[in-house]
Each structure stands twice: as structure tokens, then as C-alpha cells.
Length: 360
Image (tube, rainbow, N blue to C red; front, side, top):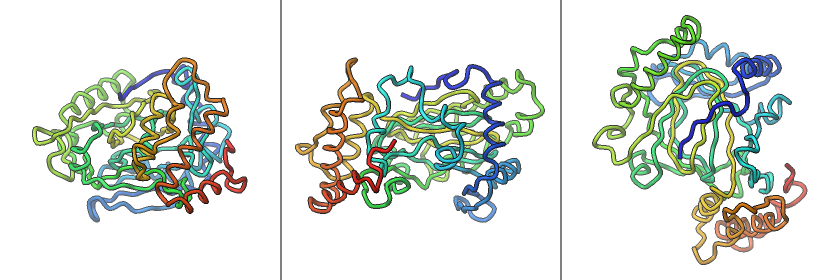
């Protein structure tokens, strides 16, 4: 289920804010690519620009609903700073068995952590994450709205869903996973939300108490999303919809856990900074394995490599048996996707020293 947790990475707001300051001071000169959504040109059109991270931050202060900026970067935190290490994985208390993705060959292992930022009015795409993993998003600064829809054929039909191959870390050739993407923007037009306080009010003018009252009012209003926003497609909210949405406001210092295959889209109330990642443990291993098998067209009778992922208190992810079962799973998937000859060749490539095999 969708879950919000507090006090996960930092015990207090002072330490969290200090980390943000240190991070931007250290990384402000790094090159990033970001998206600009300018509804004055054509609704739904997103263009990509490049600048330094510091340049993006400056531009985010001018962001608004009709001309917003959004950044999702998988490299800055992975390669640019030692500061990222404490935020790269969830604390062991949340997942004592570790991340089974660490046993995947590096070429098909999702990158972590990811930097996610946006200015006022920014929004992500409406999507479902690849691999059917369990995702997480830790908000370091700001506030944003999340809207979730449960998985299933009703949502896929309503959102005119297409599948998107995981090429950003898959090198574009293994093709064992694909997320779901929708052209629908559930926040396309502001309605009641036009009366919400501005980002300037929230960030500069209000006391902490006034700010919390304002965010609570926004959260309450979002229980009637159809009154606050008009989506780009009909039937998303209200009695005509066959799927029930969940909407809430995430505040700075809160960690969000995103269950497998749930549709979600975010809306930035004000400039915000987050770190995001994903994990694979025994709770979602069956979801991930079946996602891979489904995408690769593997028959039920031929699905192997999943039996080692049962949930039990004695599970030890450090044993060689786990690596063997994951290799069996990947062999079956690659053969199903590419045929026996090409699939086995790709398996050898995955586990070759040149690709990095299990270089964590």
C-alpha cells in the first residue's frame, strides 16, 4: 500500500536543511538536463534544456503552472558527490534483507539514488514504474501533491497506456522490463487550485504554523480533485471513473513508499527537492519476477528462478544460491524475449567483466 514515513534519513529539519545546502554548494556546477512545460505554446508539450544544476535552481524560482520546470537526474547523485551515500539506500531497519537488485548485473540494475526537482506548477508524467518494483521518494525540501490510481486494466484503458522500455540503464538491448506511460495530465488545468497560496507565500511569507495550516487545507481540497484540477482526458475523476484515486500532500522530511504497479503523478506546490530510488526484496520479488516474465513472453510452465524469493524470516540475500536463482530468471527471460541463441549470448554479455557483472 501507499505509505508515508517520517524521520527516516534525518532526525530533525536542521540536519536535513544543512544537507541540502551542502549538496547544492558542492554540485551547483554539474551539468543537468531538465524539462520545460510551456502551456502558452501547446498544452502537454515538453521541451528539454541543459544547464548547470545551479542554473536550474535559479530558473525553478520563476516556475508557474503554465510554464514549469522539472528535473529527474539519475547521474548527479550516483557520480557527483559523497554526500549521496547516506541517502542511496533505505535504512536497514526498513529492509533488513537488503536489496536484491544489487544481485542483478550492473547493465540492467536500476540506478540509485535519483535526484528529482521541480518548480511551482511542475508535474511528472502519469506513469507506472518499470520492473514493478517498490519505489521510494524522500522529500528534502518543499511540498508536492501525489495522486495514485490502483493497478489494473481499467486504469490502463482510462489512461491510454503504452509500454516504455527501460532503456536508460538497460543499454537499449536486453529489454527485460518496461514501465507504463500515459499522455494524460491529471493536473492540466487549475480550477479551485487557483486560490491556493503561492510558492512565495509558503516559502517566505508564512510562519511554520501558517504554512502547515495552508498545506492541510490544500490536502483537504485535494480529496475532491475534480474540483481543483481539470485533467486532459475526461472521466479521470468523479462517478464516470472506474478506478479510485488517492491524493495527498507530501511534506519535507517525509518518505513515501510506492507499491508495485500503482499509477502516479506528482504536482509541485512550490520548488521542491527529493531523492528517489527503488528496491527489490522478498515482499515484491514475485511481482518483479512476473513483470519480467510477462514482458518477455515466458509461459507459466517455464518460469524459473522465482522459488528462492519466498518470504521467510531466515532469508539470507548474501548466499550464492540467490545469485544462481537470479541468473536462472534472467536466462529464462532473455531466451523468451530474444530466442534461445540470442538470449544466451546476451546472458553471457550481461555477466561478462566488460559489462560489469555484479560490480556494485
